[in-house]
Image (cartoon, rainbow, N blue to C red; front, side, top):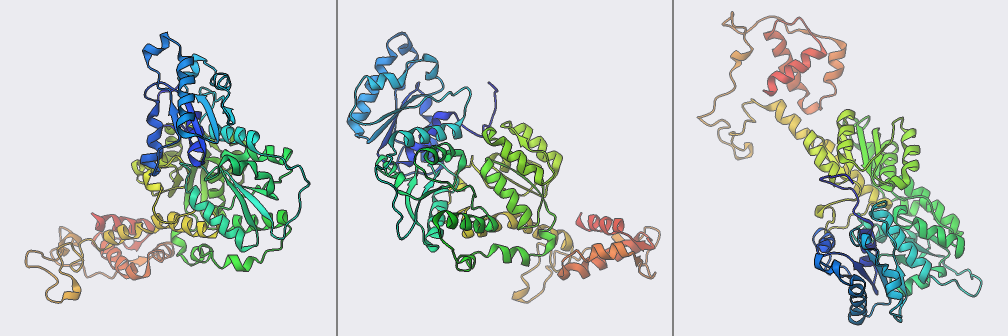
Length: 521
């Protein structure tokens, strides 16, 4: 076990809590020591949930280890059922209680409760949070889904299930709303969304759909595979993150539903492709981006960055070891080696070595980028409270593409203000003590004098230089044209004055940058 300040995923029982908290009518009894109730804070403080998770802890203490902890667990299960009356009961042990080997499943079955009991065996020392959520959802579906007795009958409007959204998921609630709306536009109804806002009764009618839409493979892939094999429900594979992927998603669901959608009706809602084409290429084309997160969001972000925004992917990685092969295949398309690691120090070293212009990552990469002085946007869990916004902010669908464009591009463009400050620093009209120009009156307070011009005069000459301005090399002229037009004249004058003061006969690219550094001081 590695001592660390940060972990990308919690233990698997936290994943089980995410599924239980997302659903209605489900209660989770967790055999855990006093202190493991910290997980409640993830939902109430970070996600800002209005209710605490439906979890009962046994909270045994050190002195209980000398007694009957099995009876303590059975009492907790009986009390939880009596108090909450759930439609289904999840039982399991935390990483610490796993060492006691009390067998929560067997102990609960001995109580003969009148509701389905799903025992969860989550090996805390081999697996982590996303796997725990996936295993929990898989066991729920396997236990509660009912295979229809009659053959499937085709309906006038096809229906699908949306699989994967959970509590504490990165923009899951907004993604579901966006994809439900998108499917409705092309004539497809949603049968069940699970596990988010689903009940055990909803899981029982999963087979009433014509196919499944897999939104988050880290959570729902095992359950979707089981339904394909046992309920004859095919499943989508395209994740609709980005405008291109959303169009492919529409084609895929239309094929499964037997429809021929009119793409024009949905494409009109996406502004990001036009915005990307309209932005000055200095801020987009060729910008170097490093991407790290869960496999689903990292792979989708790399595709959108390279195909829709013109970025150059210089790093791609994930902490999702179960999907390492998919990440490596994606990384090979961009000519980079995939980084598969849950060590944030290794990730920080990789980002520092790549020296990107933009980092797309998790909450941890936000901290790393801040230390390295790099712009960053969060694209994946784990996240903090600011990534559960009050506004509507999906990541999927055409509106999600718009949100991603704003989130990723604006940090790059905001550097323009610093560029202007450096360019105009020392100008008598723009210094910090200058009066607002729209108010009239003197623009220069009595206490402020213009920047002295003597700094450009050689020490051995008391009069300003009268020599002809230096000539510009073609390369320097080309570099000058990269500067925004509204400050280009100022940059030219400053550079020529700098060259004159240094008696430089020809202005090169090096002279241009030396002048910029001089006037930025």
